[in-house]
Image: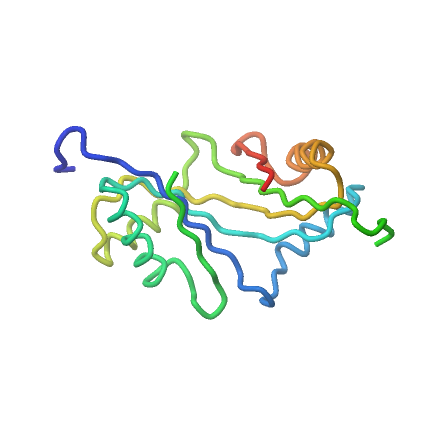
Length: 87
Length: 87
């Protein structure tokens, strides 16, 4: 990497979740499996994909870059919502 | 559900991530794909599984239940670390 020493590093969580109404078989089956194991009072289980990304750039740029990553690769706008969170 | 009206509901995030040193091909390939798209200054990408669970119980019980769920089903102690977060 050709970055100057001490270049800022930010850690970003990109959370890719299914839009409301989109079927989530992984979540549903996890709920069933937990109930079969005896766990009670589970109202729902949703499965979510998270990418934790380390970026060598300033915070504002990092958020813009992650937004672009979601649009171009990580999320499918038909079925996914995404949230970007600096850590 | 046979819960009294107004039973507490808590939302818990269970974050299942790979232990340091465990190979993460999904994260590595996501990083490569982002770089092929022209994104720069990515230091690393880690793929993480998240379960968002709605539970009808008090906060303290919910955390204990989620701890137990991780041990019995959701996480593999050989390769995973997990974090439980009330939302």
